[in-house]
Length: 296
View (cartoon, rainbow, N blue to C red):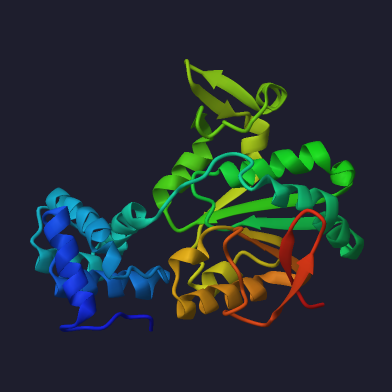
C-alpha cells in the first residue's frame, strides 16, 4: 500500500545522499519502519526525499523520551493510549494556513453552493465541515464569510465542524488567538467585528464566533471516525490530500463521499484533483470556483 522499494537500488542511494548532506538521520530500515507505521495510521506517505524531514522529528522525540530506536519504535507501536504516536504525528503534519486563504472558494460557498443546499434543506439546517483544519483559520473564515455575505443566514441553523488529526493545532484553534501573519488578508472592519487585540500583535477571535465552531480530533483516513460526525452539506478538505498516495487518497475521498448528503459539495485545494482517484463525484464549474458534488 504505497510503500517504496526496499533494499538496494536508486531509492536507497538517493536516501544515502540525503543523509550525508543533512547530517544525522535514521537508517533506511529505521526510516521505513516509521514511515510505514505512520502511513498505516494516517494515510500520509513520506517518500525517500523526506528522510531528513522525518529523521529530524523522530530523533527529537527519541531524545525527548530518552529512547534508542528500538525502544522508540515500541513506544510508537504500543505506548500508553498511543500518546507517543500522536506526538510524532503532530510533528509530521504541515500547518500552513491563514484567514481567507483561497478566498474564491469562500465566495463560491456564499454565492453558489449554499443556495443549492438551502433549496434542498427540508429542516432549514446546513452542516459544513472543515477537514484538516489546522490551527483553525479556515473554519473561522467560513463562519465570518457566511455571516457577512450570505443574506439568508439568519433563516437557517448552520453548524460548522472543524477537524484535524493533530491534537496541538486543535488546541490552538480552540483558543482562537492569532498573530499578524494569520490575519494578513483580514481588513480593519472585519478585525473590529470579530477580533479583540491581545498585546502588540496578537488577536483573539470573539467568544461568539469561537463558540459557534465545534472542534473534533478526526483522522480522515479512518472512514468510521469521519462517519461518526454525521452527514454534511459542504466539506472543505483543502491541501491535505497532496500528502497522501493514491491508495490512501482513495480511502479518504470515499469516506468523505459517505459523509456528504446527496447533492453535497466538496472543495479541494487549487492544486488537487479527483481525476485519478474516483469517478463518484460530479465536477461542478461555478463562476467562482470548480468544486465536486456527490450525486443526488
